[in-house]
Image (cartoon, rainbow, N blue to C red):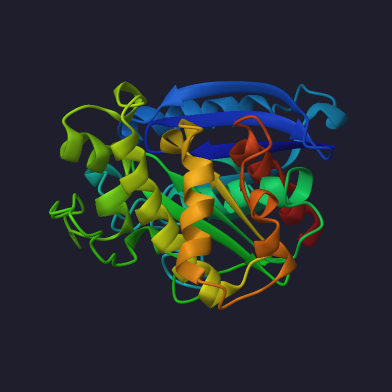
Length: 301
């Protein structure tokens, strides 16, 4: 069967068609500008995959949306499927799920956060396959976290916002933080914009500066330690542009073990290299997760 997938990001919207094996058969990228400019192009793409002239086996049977946030993921809520208090002003309170349903008809749709989508992709076809409890953290322009517990995405009154965990300042670091809401939170201290603000250059131009990555690793490890103490995952996956700095992984693992300080002794922590890992789906984990959201929606429907 064919499924539609939308990875709705703050920079671009990836629209795709895939199958139940996670294979991406067609894909386009649309810049994320304003809803009035972006959404008609998104809708046009998926309408073409539902065209009445297509044979039935060439039409998509569901649509999965993995969306930047914060978003309302509480089914039954008045604002379910809406983007909430995002820094992207034009998209605040935008009913993205309702807009797609009105345009595309009664096709089953699944909806979740972009990071939960990425984790769902990894849990279905990637490095978290077979695990029921895992974490995905993306560290880039912003910081977000997705979580599955007992095999299900973690939701609640909203969804996890671990990018805004409050950090303790690393000794010697007097940076006040980049986050307009919290200053020295995880995102405020360790996101790509925080790195550039603190050091005066973007991360990709600082690869040969070990002091940059020592400090960055300590903040990432501090957040991971808090998260693993609360959620006790079987695997932590790190993605996003900042984590393209491969030297970060051994440093993060080193400081996580230092901060845990042998308080927890599990096979996962004893095998730290496989416990804290990069994503395994070559950058396609988000759109593949959206395919799985679509498949789940079609099956539940």
